[in-house]
Image 1 (cartoon, chains in turn blue, yellow):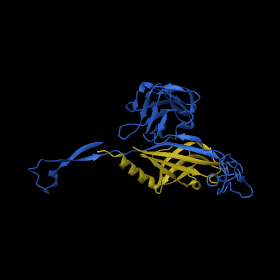
Image 2 (cartoon, one colour; image 1 turned 30 degrees about the vertical axis):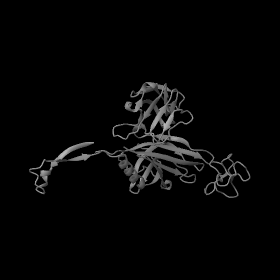
Image 3 (cartoon, chains in turn purple, brown; image 1 turned 135 degrees about the vertical axis):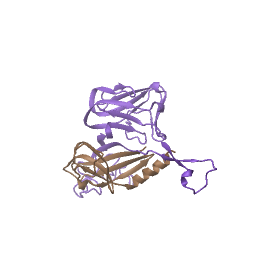
Image 4 (cartoon, chains in turn blue, red; image 1 turned 90 degrees about the vertical axis):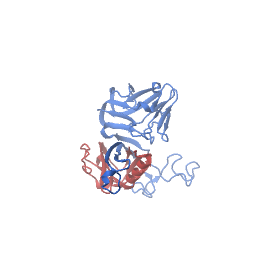
Length: 233
Length: 111
């Protein structure tokens, strides 16, 4: 926020006689408002095959395709587990969404913890809290992300930045980045550019706690920053 | 003076209300702030956006079904309002065919 004195009541040219008054000031205030584009993720799912998907023009060929047979998901008439009217659906997509590309403006990934889109739920044991916008750790717990960069340019270096005022007991946390999809993890220091020994095109973050700690990125004030990883800068 | 979280969320809602559609294209020139649209847009890929809002954040989701826009290798994407595109992103080519659906999720954050 910035402010500046623009004039006094005397500038109102006699609308009010203020000669004997305590002269108040009025000011012009400005406030910055930024709209950031965060990450763009491109995903795909396959519907190859001959599954009959109701209402799909490509996979709804009556008399040619057959109803899906995904166990306990598709509606299979007469099946006690997969034939539940109102719950199971007719037909099925053959696969779930998988990530094809992840792109960040200016090669900077920003995580404000409003969603858990990047949480690797298989490997994360700490609490990814999208209500209070924080990661909460107890001893031994980790936060691990999915790919927050996945494209064609090889990642050679990266810098992890987290506002230190947002971390409680920072000595209890250690940080690792992987540029090859989690095959090799390399220890990094906050705010220091890391050059990867094992380069790659799939960038991920792991935070490990040796004791209780939190990272709180609630940016209700204007100066705090989210968790950021800049790469190839 | 501060811009309150409530104020930012009201501004978020104004943006959210204007978001309309997404489109894919096949140009791979680097995105620039001076861009006024996709490099090579494919009109058949224009689809409505689905949006979701959280605190100071908008998530825009675009899905291209299996029977649309096949035979192209897509390298760019744009979210649009009635007046034109609001952002453009490029990526390594994705060859679209009838056995796949594509989905693009973009996040805007009001700070």
